[in-house]
Image 1 (cartoon, rainbow, N blue to C red):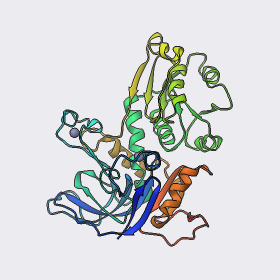
Image 2 (image 1 turned 180 degrees about the horizontal axis):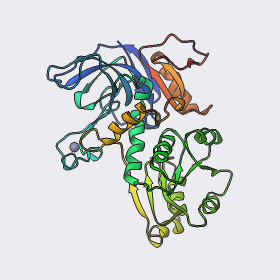
Image 3 (image 1 turned 90 degrees about the horizontal axis):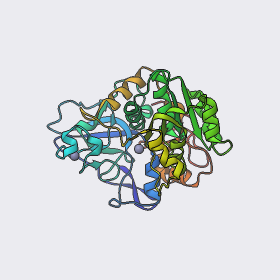
Length: 365
Ligand SMILES: [Zn+2]
Ligand SMILES: [Zn+2]
């Protein structure tokens, strides 16, 4: 079978390797679609802390090809999405159902082979049955949708609230879509990429701010009768926006941090003093899990997709065959064009490609 092996920083080779065999509590999945995550791009380009070669890919879906002897809840032929965290079930945090904080976890796609290959083995408990009505592309996006759900559920927005969302990439847009379903009054989308801002208007932002082109703080106070937002959610992962959250939230407001800055975040005096002078509640959100594993984030994500309440299809900007995975990652590194979710198809596809190896049309999956 074909697998995209990461062999060094931003160096993939697609090779024939032996097809894995599921152990007694595992299943074998024929991967149909696998998304590239922002964290994949950072890790494979800057600091790979795991074994090499490795098969990345922690956002994927497929069909169950075979099952281990002790698998009970999954059958051959099931259409499934995969939750990539394998918790230890033996630490303080696992014991209290906080699997996202597990001290000893294994992650599919970094510690063990993930979705950028034709067949992958995963534990039975990591499987979400997606039924017949969710496409494989949509199912491959349950993971980022569950990440967005974890943050929004933790912030618990109220009907009528005004919420600012920093960063209108995949997680930001999915956060906007969850927020719209909660009944908040205003969703203010903030980014520095005007293409992303225009795109975000499709998904339910009520106001947008390009913080490169206009004064963020002035505009927020203008939009909120000089009060500030009830909730600020940071999904951009920039040291600048991490601080800006502390400038635009109202007294007694709530701030949620989800984006990874990958750098030191330094706070000016005003921003830091606002934490206590304005009595902020600051929450961090990591990953997408809760009890019972993998959690309500995953169950509700699949249900809401099936009900047609979340639009995922339009978020996929580029699609590649597995053999063109290097081109797909180069696109994200070179940043020559705006991209959102980039999807990889391990089985290969028949549709026409352009010169860069990118498919023109969406697949019939
Ligand atoms: Zn991810
Ligand atoms: Zn644990």
